[in-house]
Every structure is written in C-alpha cells, then in structure tokens.
Image: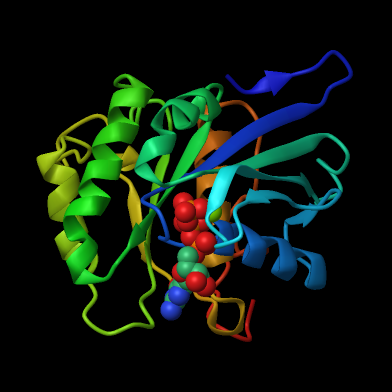
Length: 231
Ligand SMILES: Nc1nc2c(ncn2[C@@H]2O[C@H](COP(=O)(O)OP(=O)(O)OP(=O)(O)O)[C@@H](O)[C@H]2O)c(=O)[nH]1
Ligand SMILES: [Mg+2]
C-alpha cells in the first residue's frame, strides 16, 4: 500500500529484485549519483545505506530515500528505494523486504549463461508477490549489463514473461500494464536507462493511485533514454 500520512505526505516503496550480481546495488548507486548531480524529478534525501559483504555483494539490503523535486510535490512525495540481497541463501530475508512494495524493478544479468538463474529469481518474486505482480504491482524489467558480449535481448525476455504469465495480449484489460523491458547498463560512466527505468516505475505506481510523478505533455515531454552523458 502507498502510505498517505495525516500531514499530506506520500511514501512509495520501490524494490530492485534480481539474481546475485545482476547490478541492483550498482543501479541504485548510479541513480543516487545522477539525481544528486543533475536536475531530475527526484533527488536523494539523505545518504544511501548499503549493507554488504567484503566482496561487495549485498548482505541484507540497500536503502535510499529520494524526494520528488517538482514544486507541487516537493516535501510531500518520497520514495523508499530498496535492493534485496540476491544470493540464494537470503530468500527468507527477501520475503521480508518485499513487504509493502509498491513497484518492482527486476534486474536481469543479461549474459546468456545466466539465463536460467534470472528465471529462477523471477519465479521466486512471483511467488512472494502472491499474484499481484503486474496486475497491482508495476513491474519494470532492466536487461542489465548490455555493455557486455553474449547478452540476451528484449524478445528473449518477453518470451520469459509470456511463459510466466506476466504478459497480456492486446485484447486483455491489463495489456497496458505489461512490463516495459529496458536494455540497461548500470555502470555510472556508461549508464543507460537507469533513471528511465526508475521514473517509469514511479509513474506507473502514480497512475494506479491518485498522484502524479510526471505528466508527459508538450511542455513536459517524456525524458529521452538516459544514455551516458545525457542523464
Ligand atoms: N559490465 C557491467 N557490469 C555491471 C553492470 N552492473 C553491475 N555490474 C557489475 O556487476 C557486479 C555486481 O553488481 P552489484 O550491483 O553488486 O550486483 P547486485 O545485484 O547488487 O548483487 P547482490 O547484492 O549479490 O544481489 C559489480 O562488479 C558491478 O560493477 C553493468 O551494467 N555492466
Ligand atoms: Mg547488491
């Protein structure tokens, strides 16, 4: 549930989920850096908390708070952004961290040899979400590490979503809730579609509830893909 408080504040929880090493922590780190440095529709509110092992792998979770910068929602609309620890042994912990999630950014390690591991992670997410994924909880897919060789593409993952019944045909009422699949690179220097994935997730949560993240219009067109340098 989106939290609305008595003083008119709105709290949204967005969760990065995906197999170990897929780039969740790196994505939030890049999101934090780019929104701190450049004018975007969110900015960090405080620092990023990362609880990790010496290897860099997440031990519990990462957490960052962002606030909307638009005048209308400044000081009122906040995003609690979490990443789960992707290693298999942390499954019980992931279930706890999932509680209260309003939108999921599923982070895929696009290297072909990890194809099955990504599917396993998606199945676990589906299980934890108890049928609400896509229907009620917006799902954005990041096909991460597109800068590497031998990676899967949008059509490959769309087929996974079809197989997992997370994809609706055009005739279906939920067609417009189909996950968007973005090819991404989370490394700060080469970043691609990191802000965009976040903002689309936030926009979709907003359109399911009664507030607005951004309204594409001639005076406020959708942001272009955030390829390195332009975001
Ligand atoms: N080449 C490349 N490497 C990436 C990209 N994203 C992340 N990495 C690297 O992949 C490794 C793992 O990234 P993390 O962000 O720690 O992965 P994670 O999903 O948080 O992993 P867990 O915390 O174990 O679940 C690091 O060495 C990152 O630098 C990317 O887009 N391209
Ligand atoms: Mg991590």
